[in-house]
Image (tube, rainbow, N blue to C red):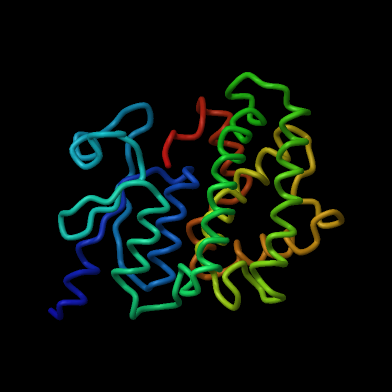
Length: 232
């Protein structure tokens, strides 16, 4: 077995399918053509493997590569991009300014979306109308960022999915689900033509389509469970 095959055969992801943070890792691996095993963490519990692999935060996702653990979703995405640099498209921009811009907007996404989605799902207390307005405002800023970062191409990363595409795109499934559950319009094609079209392209991409659950599955999960598994 070649050294490259030995590397890819030894990749496991600890996580749960509904987590947008886990989806990030899976999309990055698929973009790079890396074979992996998703080890589903039990609901309402933490496995011994997870506790041993991420003893500080004890959260999913965790990437296990040749026995070494890497935690935090965006750190994992960058790790995957660096380790398999010769495979697939580059995920993180090589240009320092473009890289800084995507990291800025990536942090903005994670500051705005996870807690808001939990409010709109009714899993934590909060004014749903006010929260929906905040998400709509955030998406408007990201519509403008798409024009800046994408420069007229299909993705924030240009011709292929990149760092910011993965960061924001991982939340699209839950955004569409809470639109239905909360009766709000967020990814409105009339108000956000570029971003709405981008979301459709992202979800249809071969690296995403098989790991991004459909809206019905998210809604069903939300009805049956108390919330999105906390992770980053």
